[in-house]
Figure (tube, rainbow, N blue to C red):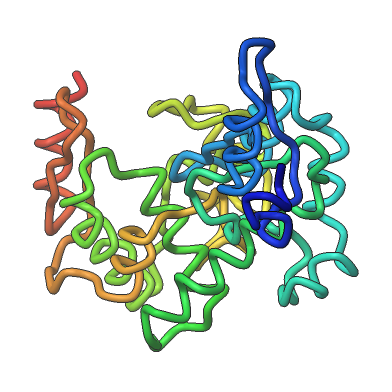
Length: 255
């Protein structure tokens, strides 16, 4: 049939899903058009590699431990253009189509490749790429409203400039559990190189995989003199210039 129709050279390789009632003509059209049977995987903005691994395992695509091991395989990461010791921060949040036989390595190559492409389109900043991505990952975890990302970025930039600890709640629980919006006293006292309550400056690496808006905010903070912010009940934040203002905001919104 393909020779009669002149389609033999147009057949596309891949895995296809067929039903019993499909005619040969419909089957041929499916193969010629490349209507491949894919599995979809969506990485939400801000998800860490741990959350990504759990989601992949829940969907039955990959084993969590194997995916995490690949995310830390420096030889593999170098093949994909990463000098870092982890893929954390460099998995671009998007929806990916996975063929049935696709491996963890192939998915990582897709995600890192998409990150590299998206980042290259954003231009340069005064920080290294690793610093930008690290800061963007914190902004992504802190922000609920995308409009506030440049404001949150300004707080972190202002604190970095004067040597003030960043005191970002999500950094206190990174590697222990997912950040859900609240931390305990034990969390902020936990010894970890990522805990910005105990360590000045940026953490050693990203704490999640930021989206484009967060990366742009890290590169282009709003021009403010804010040094503090606290979450309101609606998920937005109250920003303050000094500790007295901040303490009043804490009383108003948290107590």
